[in-house]
Image 1 (cartoon, helix red, strand yellow):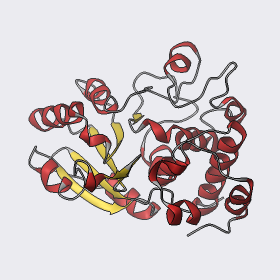
Image 2: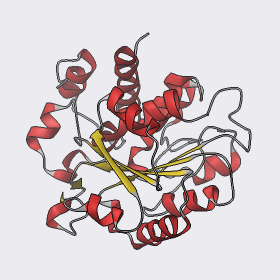
Image 3: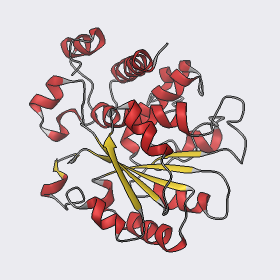
Length: 269
């Protein structure tokens, strides 16, 4: 099965899981599905055979609202049992969800490295994992999440210590729950220049293009690498894009009419 078909399957997992659970951050997940797909399938050294090894690569989803997208990608890749999606954010015996702390600490979900909960935690965790280790660490943050000071402390440290085994990935969609990032605290417009100032090489790409993502992740840089992936929050759901409303579809399921549209592929952009 080629990448395009597998991405469609991932999105079907995503839509169906959210609809069954009647909750899920669909627009946030659609913003970063391709990023996570490329990391888990083409870049990071994480397989079914080495998932519980301490020396394998790490992928951290700091923008926690994309957890639904992550578990859909992992299910497609065979890194978790797809049956676990039935437990996504359910009230009883839930083992997957927005905040996975309990699941990660108590259950055997080896491919999920860090449960962040609140925003701004993933990059500091990543720095700790990358420090004095030989494996690679990939951390996905949102552009709105960069309003958290903990991220900038980590960026300063990475640049100062020249940590080249950690890659900062910014899901740059210029939206957060209640407005455009540029209308709140602008961590969107000049973000490349700002991060370069702290000692990074910054590469930019289309965050929905598999080939471009693979190219920038594989690119050799002289300094620590930051990848800015330009994305669309709610991609593939025209009604979510057109109606906007920011928080309108943030965590809510679709109407049955819109659910059928996305499952039939009639909303694909």
